[in-house]
Image (cartoon, rainbow over all chains, first blue to last red; front, side, top):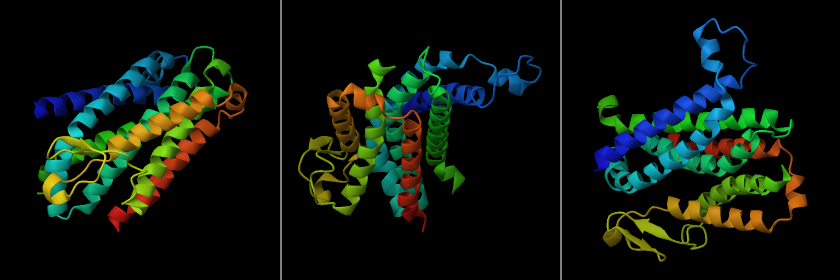
Length: 154
Length: 113
């Protein structure tokens, strides 16, 4: 059961990363009218269409992580402590804090991306999207490193 | 926009309260205020009181910090007058969380020293 949950957690995180990275790229610069290369096509998505999906994926992925946390605390963290891998514990501590900060940002992120949001929110939605993308990338990479730590650091 | 202005209060407060909770828990580990409940995964039980680690194993405080941040932020965002919430600048809703991320990274550097 726990293996299924780990895989579901990872798949949800991949979906979240894809949506957030598309949106983060699309707000970085005004979309080019002629989409010749792959970067332009990657950026040239309808950013607002991703917002609700990102919010739902962020919440569901976090809930999944919260369900996995007890098993991590007992099995993985104690192993890391036994092996004196303090940095590995540290990056996970940051991961849990980042998940919390990201969850808290979701209401205002939704507000900034609402259709018809005031012009003053143009910069805000760009930076909020970048912050959420940074948090999601950190959490994904840390999760993958910790999941594969025995192979990465034999 | 003012109809949802309270969302700005919630989002700013949530991160601040969460960060304060885990920081103060570290500074005052015996205080019950910063983590009002704990989950002990080894025995699969929730407790308000601290349990001895020899019998209960390690505790998870993350759920309590999240719950505390959610309840406090939700209450304040409901109570705060809308005209005050409207005065919160659009910039502060990303600058404060960005600053919190830096604070978290600086605080957690203790793991890498």
